[in-house]
Image (cartoon, rainbow over all chains, first blue to last red; front, side, top):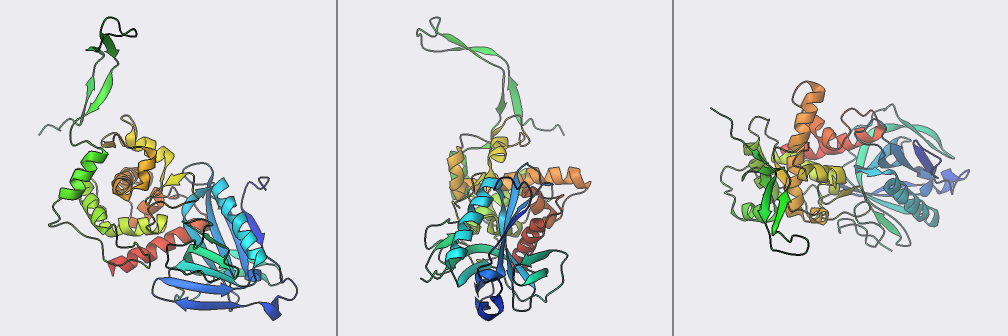
Length: 170
Length: 220
């Protein structure tokens, strides 16, 4: 894993080839400051982005890119800076959650009401193709699967994995 | 008017101590060091005193919007007090509005006092180890006004972490001015705090958008 010194993606492609039949993207709930999403793992790409032009060596940013129902990409980002180890640790833990689940719940702070724009960044989703970011982003708080396995941006892997604003349902 | 001295150099001198096998003469040599004068440092005791007794008249309280976080309004008083305290302490620099600080804390920790999973930074303001050292160093970037008797684990206490984070913002404001040739905007200041002022990454874009939304919500 550490052979990758720059950006590294993990693509979850459990539904590759048959993704259209089983894939889904749904805004489960949305308030002024919070958004809850229900998506299938084929629509998710995890990324630890190296920040080589940051103030200190070894800065990383963690992001979850989500292919929505309009074939544009919304990004859920943990907005505090991490180090390489911390970033890949959560990327690996979340990868396991995605592999074991079919319905993925994501809780993020922010809103998805801005008009979509075409950003310069693109992301590849196996079985789907490569699509551009839409300018929308959320602050990552929690992710879980239908088995109750979860990971919280600020609370780690111990359920309920968030401070209570996003109830994790088993 | 002459500028008030904020610290003094104490020259090497002898100090009387109890007679012991290590100090049979009953004296020890104290090396030259810097002594910060009262009003140029904070320690946990002083922080507590100020937090409990600071006059709130005229102090700008952050907007009472929890930004969707369970503890989003919990630290408004501390933010207001220390924003005002350091604005008065560093009058020569632009005052940093309490809503900027609240939005920053929201983006750093979602107002969690002790967020887990980040070994390089601690507490509600996500202060890194090098930053923590700099805030305590008598000869570091924050030497004009430092913290004393604070331990790394104290950063898990928002009462300590919030004044340290705001003090660091004032250090970063000066550093950003040096980089930009002018005082930074609120967004530039936050990017400097996060160590990404000059970054061109996707992540910088996301972190900035997140701060921008939170700050706009508080300002509206």
